[in-house]
Image (cartoon, rainbow, N blue to C red; front, side, top):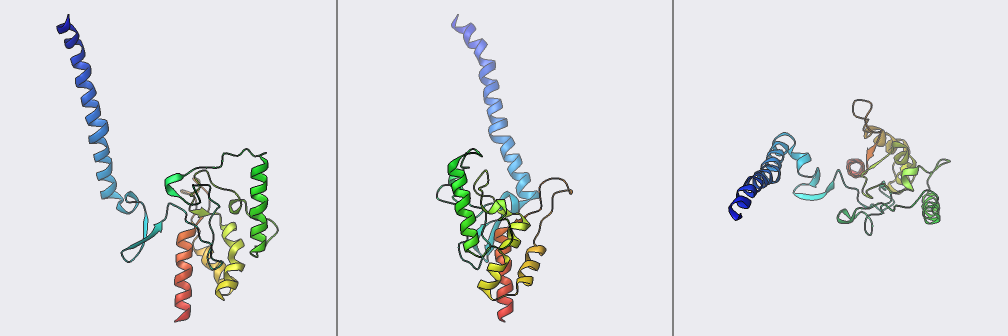
Length: 197
């Protein structure tokens, strides 16, 4: 009886080990290797560096609070922009907490000198992950007057910078027009340092 059970279980056990080796070791190693060879920048987190120092990732938003910088979408991740604690607020559209949070963010945007009739939605609502690195061009353009004042630059130069950093949908269909906030702010710093020379 014991021999028959062992004989019946042996193929299942061998198959389990084989599938674990293929799906748990071989396949991940293959995909990692292909990623490192074909797209090493993306496979390693799309890290942005100043020399050898990592200053961020193109894929993860970070908080910019100075008036001199474009500010990203609000974050609900941990205590804000915490990549180890990504989360949305999960508040329903009719939620009083959500309405209050949006009203507060709109008031803050107006207090910071936001121009235009309507504050863009992506400046007052969090993204699903709480770490969206991109803004709509409209949200970036609406911050241009504040940044121009804070940096002593012409607003037209700041708007031209935003315009030059717009990324378009893949194949004209997938995604939306967007601006990466970290890359935009780095370009803004480079523009300011070139102006001061």
